[in-house]
Length: 79
Length: 143
Image 1 (cartoon, helix red, strand yellow):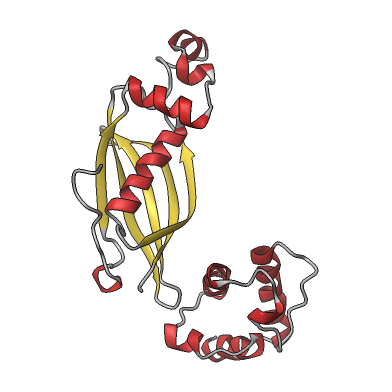
Image 2 (image 1 turned 90 degrees about the vertical axis):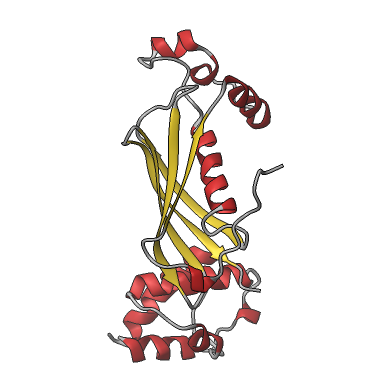
């Protein structure tokens, strides 16, 4: 799957989780950039991404992620 | 106060396919209290005559009361003590009436190790027939 397709899919998820269609999902995006990005919405994000891509991540894999770009790299590594 | 404490299941105790069932029936007093707490005095739930005029046998048990029984299941049994309930979707398919015996069953459908989220399939049955069906997501708080 191409990067653009992955970003398109996760952008939809971010928009849904944060109820904000204007949110720009970039590789550098982190939780500190989004007001509503707390622990519960983080869980909802990871879960939605697992379901959307048919993947399972470990707690360790997710715990190491520093930004959206690293999450996309993780997704690509498992596809 | 509950008769028994909530079951303290840990993540390692959970497996896909695991189930828990809670039998219950709803009394007229339960209906009166629910009406008071919810503010829902819709005649479908408080008037036998009105419910019968709509094709039901008698006043229909609130869907919200069935959700309350799901709350019992999730909060006390599966996953129990360490649960934070985050989502429910429940289809109400057939009515339950006051005094009728029924049971709510939860089955672990998915486990997300990365998030601690437990996906449950839910069913409310009476004499083997499905009255309501749905799903829930429950976070198991590990610490």
